[in-house]
Image 1: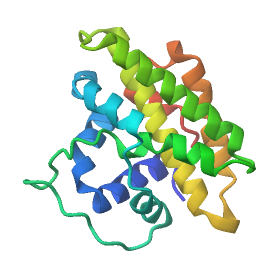
Image 2: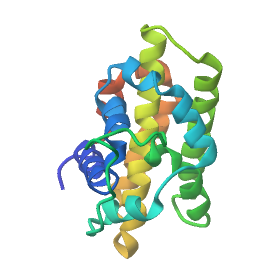
Image 3: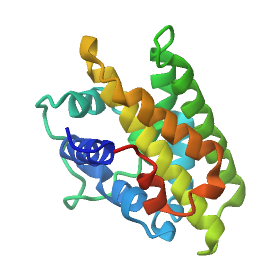
Length: 192
């Protein structure tokens, strides 16, 4: 395996194969600029509240399993308007991990994502400033945390131990957002 960051980015690529309508939001989350993500605040908030996701596709991507590629929208890579399916899966992942060694981490990630979506809903339109960069970085951390939980879940009996350390790093950064001013810094917190 390469770095944890590579695993998260490879997983993101796998989800896009199965959920091509997520291309625009995934690009906004991982590549920015913050405005690209923050202009999607209404759909991100609605999608998270409704837990709009495709758990089967997210699991297949994590497990490296083949699957039917979902039909893209009117144009390849079109935004499907569902928000970010990966981050929106955090509440379900939290419920499904109950009783496991990852349960408290999954709960904390889901709670952090919930708080972030409440903040996004309250702020609405944000100017391109350091506060917007920090919100985008926190969203990228939630994205990375969800990807790590799916990779852990798909690991079966051989659940990789590195996922625990990586989720802990994501949680530490989420709990002290002053140290994560932008998306590159958010992805840099992932252990090598």
